[in-house]
Amino acid sequence: MLKLYHYPISPNSRRVWITLLEKGLEFELVEVKVNGEQFKPDFLAISPFHHIPALVDDNFKLVESLAILDYLETKYPTPAMLPSNANDLAIVRMVELVTVNELLPAATAFLPIMLGLPGEAEKIEQAKHKSSVVLRFFESLLDSRPFFGSENITLAEAVARTIVPLLLPLGVPFNDYPKLTAWCERLTARKAWQKTQTTPEMLEELKSIVISRR
Image (cartoon, rainbow, N blue to C red; front, side, top):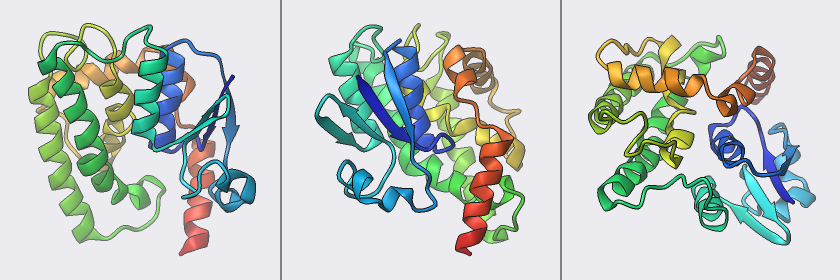
């Protein structure tokens, strides 16, 4: 059986968790607390860089969330979460990579605010600007179809939807992004997102870890 080693509040972990649920696969969840459990020898034997998530399929060990998503799509292709059309596939890949390389680093600057801690004003303003650029780009990629490049849910949703909503309570306006707002609401109604939703208890646990490292 598939075994996912994860930390539930982590966007990197959550995108794999959501994909497993959307594909209807049987899997075991193993939570790895980021208060030091990620450095234990048993986990390092699976993920030598002590990063989460990690996936084990029989004796095959995988790290890096985007690589894990590609593995799941190739080995378990039904339901398909990548389009076959070249343009649509490029849209999905762009959303994945822009989320990871541009939006996630920007959202990280908001983490103290999300946890009720003081943040650095200059970094927050820079992050708001970069987030707005990404959101405009995403808005331009959405068309009349409900998902990025597809009538059906794709890996782009699993990756981007774990980050985009974090910006809503942090002062990033969504008024200019009606298609993206509807996209967020559409995904919120899906069972996979409801099952993996961040809870106040998760935030409090993460807050205590962040404070202990300051």
